[in-house]
Length: 343
Image 1: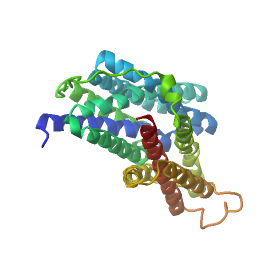
Image 2: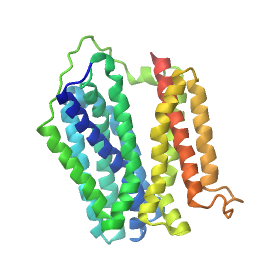
Image 3: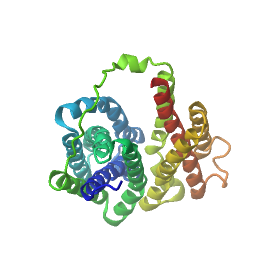
């Protein structure tokens, strides 16, 4: 059965907001570190700024479920987008801060605020998208949200690098912020919130029950290791490519988007092969093997660092692609594995 036009428009609005979330998540990886280094901020401090979003997201995301139940899914999604709009717009003004310590602390504060917005908006996008589908088709909402977020993550570095090359550090951030503000307008006025009638009673499950479900801790550790694999590169890849190959911001963005593209393509493929009988555990193990191999050649290991076969831009594309596919296998394997052992 075809969806009515109003619901199609709703899905487009939600997807647009989620794409922007993905863009804002990865864009600083291609434009921030060199900006920070020019002000005397160390690579480790830049890594703290870029990596803080993962810590804050981990801490804040579980609270979103309670907020949705209290304030409504559309309102929570709207609040998250507003927070992202303000933090992204403000982040652009760091271009005019020359003092190193002030630059670092402001960047860290705004990145944390952005992480709060991500933690609120993304979890709300799943049920909000599900409201636009019939009961039997709501799995499509998850697929659409995953795909659009992956597209945004893939676009972030290249878009950031291109716009920075055209108009400086602030321009890409202000463009994305303008997109967020436009999404807010669409959510306030044209968007129609569909109410889903509750047909069954929900059973409350404690965090203790979830954590101690057999296999959850092992899958959780696997996710932690795979999830942090890309973070090791966020603060170092930009200056490495700049110093080693004299790459421009736009070229660095293109290289960094390889991981997100590989993950976006690899995730549905991983789900398909698991659906056909491939073991979730073997998918996780194969994913971690791919990540390990990619790191061996991204470094590369001592003895290979001067070998021209490994020290070139095309090989960086290949290694990041392997890493992205490996992360997809690990993430999808753990997600489906958790569902199997908990249902």
